[in-house]
Amino acid sequence: MRFRSILFFFYGVFSASNLRAATLTVNITDQNSNLIENAVVYIKSVNGQSLPSTPKNIEVDQIDEMFVPHVNAITIGSQVSFPNSDHIRHHVYSFSEAMTFEIPLYIGIPAAPIRFDHIGLVTLGCNIHDHMLGYILVVDTPLIAQVTAGIGRFEVVPGGELALEIWHPLLAGDEVLKQSLTVTAEENAVLHLQIELRPERMVRRAPRRNGNRY
Amino acid sequence: MLNFFTTVLLLSLLSAIPLAALAQGNVDVSVESLYNDNISRSIQTIDIHSDLNLKLAANAGYYWQVADYTGISLLGSFTNTVYQSYSGLNNIEAGLGLLIKHKFGIGEMAPALSFELGFRRNQFNLNNRDAWVYSTGVVFNKRLSQRLSGNVGLRFEQRDGDHNVPKFNPANPTAKLKPGNSWDVQTRSVFVSGEWEISESMWLNSSFQLQDGEVVSTATPFPQMLNAATAVTFDTLFGAQTVAYRIPALTKIVTLDLNRALLAAGTGYFGFEYQDSRGNGNIDYDVLNIRAGFIYSF
Image (cartoon, rainbow over all chains, first blue to last red; front, side, top):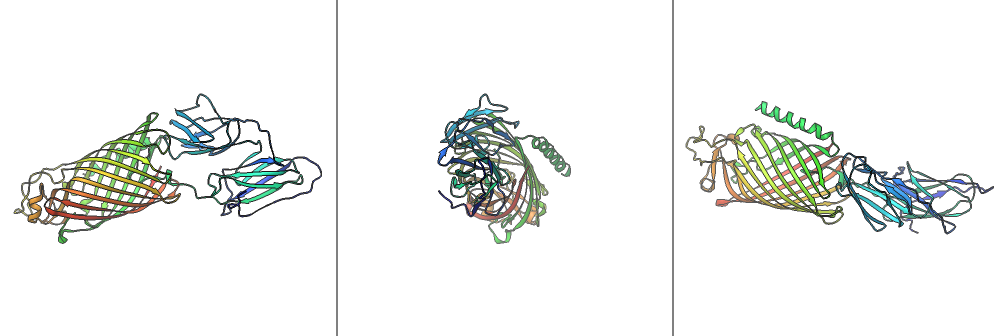
């Protein structure tokens, strides 16, 4: 387990009276205490056991020359559709080890969704617009929370040791942060994490002196 | 001349409006201030003048992806430059260009080849410099790593001045003149350039250009110049006794700019350009430009 980027954490421990589901809230800030967006938190295993996951199909749209949502997390075997809502054509591709594919120039809805059968990170790009970047994290667990305004939530059964993994595209140093915790009761538990993020990469989209955009 | 300025300005703005409304179009506006330590491009100390200018520019582009790996851009530009001391150099420039780019493969690491063709109209307060400028070129681009990309290219430019050379200079009738417009100039260049991302928001641009062709200087006449020049005409910009002369020369141009993304769509930069010209008849001079500017993209 690598914790270089976790500056501090704590979690709530509460008393148990039965095994009703409890809510685990993961609260993540960056090194400047800003609530972060675009992080993915997932529970890799409970008591060391993997969890059966069901594929879930999603859409990754293209709006204003951006992949929307910018960061996505799916279970293995899920299918992703890549509609293009811009009124210009895009050429979506990925060279990632977890999934290599390309959808040549198109506008609107492509003929078929893409199925993701391997776990890992899939980085999306557009062959026309080099500044377009998107991410699909393929995991083998159904317990996934996408962090919005610094908050990600799970419904968990108290009593088990949870192996959490945290990923963000700007995570400094480590690719995935790992954290284990045991929820011992049914009340709401809160895990506070502070992670170190790299600055946003602004260079690619910035205008150039005497430069043609395309 | 005001009518021409107004017409060009209106045409440029009108052409920019529909382009800005299209997602695949883009409009950039910029402001730049530049200090030139030898604006007359002279070799004699007495003739060397420096000046500071302010340039406002708007560039619009519209892009069509015509095939999987090939795109065409139509580019329009308008520039207004004002000088602090030598107002005769105040000028506007409006141009149109066409760029065809072919990418050899998928992804940001795939190399690309671009062909450029363009023309522009350049009009000055002191109108002996007015000209049409035609240019064409080819550029090969390759990203070498996540942080480094490079270009190598060839460019040809022809500048056709408006005015025929006078038979004599009314202010200096004894000055020897040579037929031809000093501002009818042709240049051929080969260049390499690179871009290095220093951080997530900062990058360096650098280029080296070797230019073979003609250059124009303004100076008090002297025998060495009169023998080497291929055209001499009078030019009152720096005084009644000066002439503009054209000589073939080999020019080396080096640039270095530090750029910083300041906003989501804005870039500030600071840099310099050094020109070293070696002309016929040992007429050699150098020019240093120092510039700072800001570009905003809509």
